[in-house]
Image 1 (tube, rainbow, N blue to C red):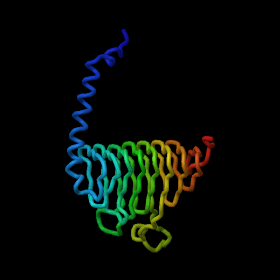
Image 2 (cartoon, rainbow, N blue to C red; image 1 turned 90 degrees about the vertical axis):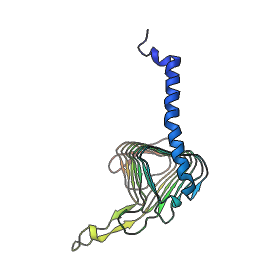
Image 3 (cartoon, rainbow, N blue to C red; image 1 turned 180 degrees about the vertical axis):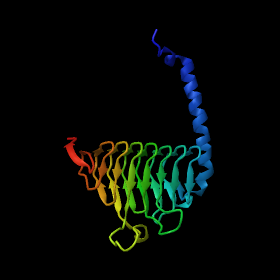
Image 4 (cartoon, one colour; image 1 turned 45 degrees about the horizontal axis):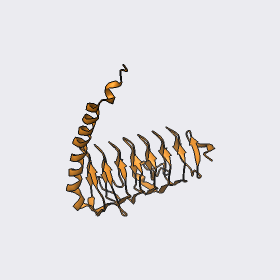
Amino acid sequence: MSRFSGLESPRAGIAADVGFVRRVVPMFLRGLLRKPLLGKSAGPLFVGRNARLSNLGRIRHDGRLVIEDGAEVQGLARRGLRFGSDVSIGPGSMIRPSSYYGGEVGEGLLMGDRSSTGANCFIGCSGRIEIGNDVMLGPGVRIFSENHAFEDTAASIKSQGVVRGTVVIGDDCWIASGATITANVTIGRGVVVAAGSVVTSDVPDNAVVAGIPAKILRYRA
């Protein structure tokens, strides 16, 4: 008998179903409490344990939105945050357009249908970030739409503030675990970014890139 045979039993399936219900129902109820406060909530909203949502009036979603355990979604942005349908924000991920401690309000985020972040991603959308449809961000992906100014050697870098830019990611991309995307980068449709890469310049459609800084290895077709 296989040591995995127990996984095929009806009891295992029932236990899995019960576990799913016990997890999802509280997420749905947490979402119900927040839905009336959102700028637009056009589908089911699921909110995990210890998830933090702020400035809800500037957050909109066009279909099912899942915000998993410990995620942080901050809506304080000029253009707000807008999510398409069937979007999921992974556990521990952070979406931050603005500082909690004053300063200029950020621009915001647009994230298309069926796109998702893995665990512990960081999306710093103080500049504008646009993520297309069917985009997968692996665990620990970081996207930054601003850079610190540092040209004046007579002043501290901290005191010189930031220069904001934009990041655009086309449809049907896979940004693998631990990759970093810096400001003023456009990633085309169908791109694959290898794990741990740092993308500092534009990437054409269907390219596979890797490295620090990321370079084109080949094209998918």
